[in-house]
Image (cartoon, rainbow over all chains, first blue to last red; front, side, top):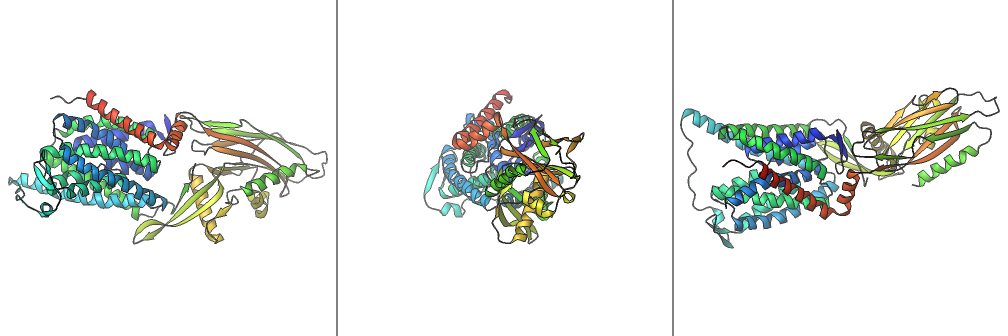
Length: 306
Length: 253
């Protein structure tokens, strides 16, 4: 049965949307990622306008991070002070990102910025992951474990002022790095429709040096709140959140994720990371081709206030 | 809008022309409602040509039916290749283009009348023009106008059927006008023209309304009238569905 998406203003088959949500949910469950970076391009490939894809995916991530955030909360592995600081930066970043997105949209450049942003981001992250997972696979095959990173007790981050104690992370650092990190991830969420976990998690571990035990929970709380704020802000300033599309994607996503988690648990870490890296690079390549290839029609038409 | 009024006036004044065949026409429905499971429907425009008592004018008669949607303002952007990448860098606004346009005729429009006649009544995809363009270059405006026509044709919102007028006998005719799911809401007009020897001798215009109703329309209104509440509702739905899934699929251990 065809259904009409009121905001995207197009007819879609509900099963296709449900299946898309399910597939992305499956992969995000398997790889332990939010999946926004897969869902937004997938929706754009299907023909959903990029601004609707970006804004609606934010609400999908709100749902998919909810379950994880509850579980982590129960395990008390959330550093509330850190989450608060990240969130303060995150909300400002989101507001700034939504404002910027509105400007880009009015200038007719939102589609290009979303695509180009994805190519750069996914290309970089995918390349790094591919490199790392191949090195890990090679090391495990030859029997030599990888040398662990040398413990660095002090980096430039520890020299910044306005230090604050984060009890649960056992850290005494300046508030600026988490503020800036939160801001960057919030802006990314607004412009590209991603949760930003793939940047937040490595940054918390390597840059802020938070203990791994609280990283997952704290980042999930941050992603949950930031994507919820993004959804509301996109709805109020760009009118681009499609609740019908969101509902179908979420229904597919939460079911798909459960199967993904079960399959993912049976696979080895390096294999999962290698697969994910190839997937990420594939999406990035597909978007790059879209930017370089001569379009079917070099003109595009937007009808005002329909 | 000025152009539309002028056009309506021209159409209204025509039937008073003496000595012409008389034209009567009607619509199968004067309101089309697009609902959630709407996949498109057909509007039927039908009519008859009443023969004039004067049989001396034996020229070829042609019937042309035009259905126009509400006028819209369109922003058209053109991509150019910059450093190998296609990027939007030209923008023109055309206002007063119909958002929907369908024309059916008894034979190819070019054979029915001269281009200036078709231009005057805006009959045919090559002759439907915007009221104004945000450029002074007419060749550039034409280039962008053609882009609109291409885009609308792809979306099945513009079409030209050169033998879409079906005659049932000598004077009775019928046209099936497809109205797809994406048809914009608003007031449409169905115009029927009778051409003789390349000149419009009779015309009639009937309004009809296309509206979206049901859940989709309510959601659209909700999103635009109460955007904050709508955003909150979406978040609430997401949070609830996420929470429910964690209850239903509780991980063992």
